Length: 225
Image (tube, rainbow, N blue to C red):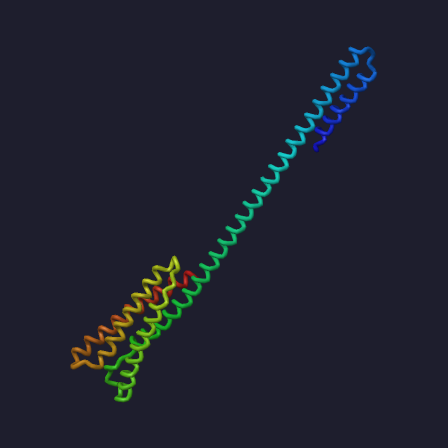
């Protein structure tokens, strides 16, 4: 109970005591009856005020408890929301790291195959028969590895926002790499020098286009790390 309220009720009941004290010390029937009547009214007023105060105090305490519970519920909900947001961010960050690691690995492997195609020159006069056979075998290996790499890339589609441009560049790079690998293998089945030159131009151009797109994808992935 606040000090002001405590003093109020103290004075109130002192007044009740004074009213009964006056009634007890009254002389004459009429005066005594009137004094006790006034003292009783004062007592009833004090009791009513006390009961009313206690009821309101109880209501205030209940309201205070409800408000405290509401605050605790709101705080609990906020904590849950913060924890949920942190879990979502951690999950998104984990997905981004997984995507960048996988995509970077695919890009590195695709670039290595592209470089092999670009720096292969089976039509050179300095190439011996054994070297020619080795380059032919290499072309088949590159075609096989390029197709396997493209299947691996297409088979793992991690849906991570913000990587659309990098994914598009890798898709284009893979497509050009497959074209280059096919043309590289087909070069060995050319019927004349004109067809050899045409197919060499094809696989070199496709390989350069693949390299350009893959290097672009690599730069985009590096900015995300």
